[in-house]
Length: 339
Ligand SMILES: C[S@@+](CC[C@H](N)C(=O)[O-])C[C@H]1O[C@@H](n2cnc3c(N)ncnc32)[C@H](O)[C@@H]1O
Image 1: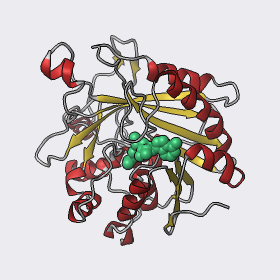
Image 2: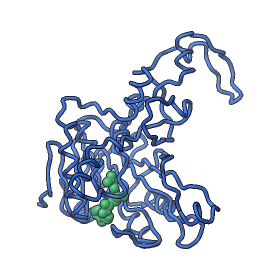
Image 3: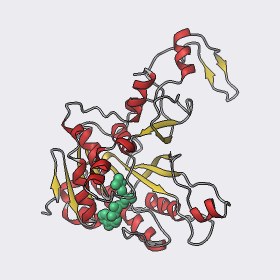
Image 4: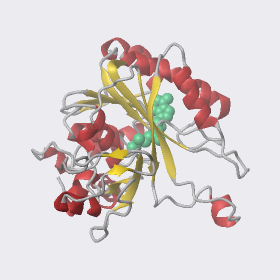
């Protein structure tokens, strides 16, 4: 039995190639047990980067094969959530179709029997201008500022509860709830709005599938009140980054936003469920799972990243009694007086 590189109260991190670990070492112990696979795999690149991403057809083949492994280990009502950015053709101002072909191949892999439950767009307004050549130098493209987040499952009804991830009401909704007055009837969209449809206070509105990673600004009103769900980026007061700085360690360059991981864990799992990240990097997923009282398993091939991820578990926040995650949603609710 493979031994974890380190363990915590709720999780284990394994050093090594995820394909090997999940299809050999841990296959029987994980089979049908994982409630959520949450991961940002190496992105498809048209040139090799530090952490050994594959490119072109090689990438696609590798990615599609993962569907079989992932499908075996998730439970019947489990989910797979994959974050993947856009890729660009080398030396040309055009986007590659690789990430889309990879997704389609993944879902259509007959041995995996998966389906696409929903696609999310994760918009990050703070993204640096890229691809730099076409955006900042030649000024012929706009900033590529979102990643795709695909939610897949083995069943049409994986465990999910959108009431756990409500977003704050807009100011107009709040005044409507107070005044209890609005125009009912048929809207231009042909939706019929009943006399009482909007009068019940559900403690927040149901979120949309566009997620904005915003910088915290306590003085700012909700920027996109009706349609876009904003989660605050707490990166600047992050224990992990501060500790990396203090110890002179270069933090993982492609960390998943903490709040994005927390959001999907809360939406798709319950405390005690098992969450897996096969491409853990600095192990944002494991940390958020631990904080939210979920068991977790992560695998990562690069020992430096495995070592630095240990730092996350020294965060005093984990010692607090509070298991509820103060992710962007709850922070925002506090600031806006909702919830
Ligand atoms: C996009 S990063 C993940 C970052 C992570 N979500 C975080 O928050 O830090 C992808 C990671 O996958 C790792 N990786 C690449 N190929 C792998 C493999 N075959 N098995 C395990 N890990 C791998 C890379 O070393 C890299 O750290």
